[in-house]
Image (cartoon, rainbow, N blue to C red; front, side, top):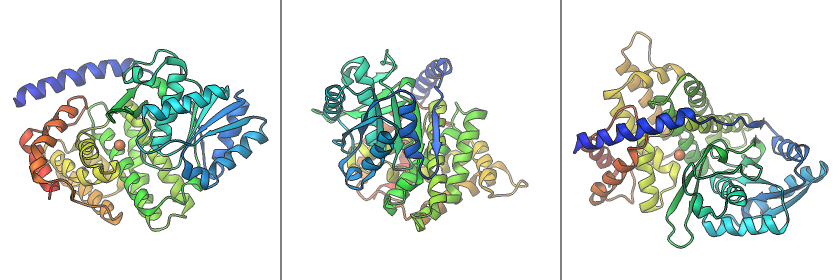
Length: 399
Ligand SMILES: [Fe+2]
């Protein structure tokens, strides 16, 4: 059985790897720094967009963020229309509602403002504006036409959705998550404005930061990693180790907020080339079964999966040790990889993140193991974890 699973994984990853090599990742326009959200809004008007649909949620409207964007758009001579119906885990119904408003107001472009949910909803609206119902776009490379012009301003630093080719839209009836994956989903322009991030609660800062860290590490050590990926995810890893503890202690630290948002963005770019890995395969099951926030689930799973890789493929983890300045060059790869994993555990502990999942009973281990193995077949993991190794990992997480 292990051989069949391994062979399936090899075939799927091999095939996806060939497809991935032929896909070109579009270049984005990036604005970063205090006030960059206004710069992006003015840039959109300069690019000829006159009627911009802002896709966001009610909380950010109440915080006055939509009004600030409106001022910038109007100063530049454009008009802003606000759709603020986005909820966590956006559904096809939300996409349809946003699209109807886009059409009623005869908008010519879309600006997402918010966390991963708002950006994913905006991707869904922009894709279905030119390609038909969003349900028909679920899957890999289903989008034929270029999207309605799409731009993004993230207000969390973790999902990397502002940089990635993916969106998650749930079916309004079944609540089953649908994954859209296509390079056309990558927004044309992004603003990383630290002034919009200073109000992020401490728990959200920690969880989303752990998600970004997982993206950075999984892309760095995965089998599709290359020089470009290592440049992006290595930089992201270093920035997160340096700055996440600072923003966790002091949410008003604008410089560190900017560094963490850049790290999240770079790690998202790395995903476009190198995908994620085993940590995500397990964490997604916890999200689906128990509603565990994605970053919290990643933080719990990450050190255990890395422990396994220290044993079987420590080389890339040893490189990451050098990136963050732990371990010594005289040590073996195994010793330096162990030092990196210990540093990761220490960082997650500093962020107050859990090490076990209270809602995960040991009786669920077989089901979670099955579904994690199935999802993992598509990821270019550095080592194919056996069923027995996976159950050992899950046993350390369950209560
Ligand atoms: Fe993630």
